[in-house]
Image 1 (cartoon, rainbow, N blue to C red):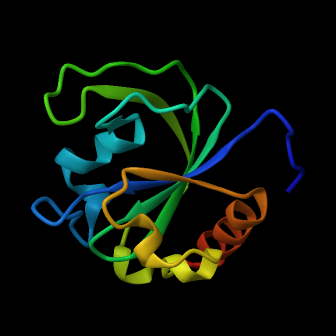
Image 2 (image 1 turned 45 degrees about the vertical axis):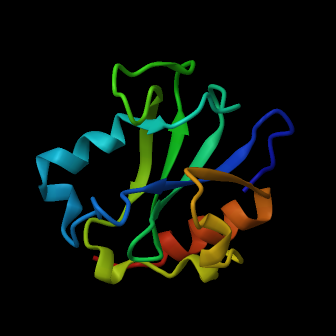
Length: 136
């Protein structure tokens, strides 16, 4: 993976303790829309072209890669007032098959109480390798 010096990399939590991602999330209408956009409690520093590793927080597993394809915008949602549009690059439809977050060199506690964290290009590459190695 070539490192783009203008691109930032993030690990983005999807789901939470009171609303966890279901194991077969892709077949659930409430969740597959997360491939088109994702919300934030505060205005993120994320910009178009940035890459996200999607993290199922309750499962402590990484299950997808996405690229931000538009500017931060108001979401109209009270809890997550900001959102960014996404293009899914690669996803794992069943969370039981997804690799643990440790596969990308990040500990689950790093994501505790965070909607997203900045990660290194190397951590993104490790996540891409781990997610891409899951066969279906």
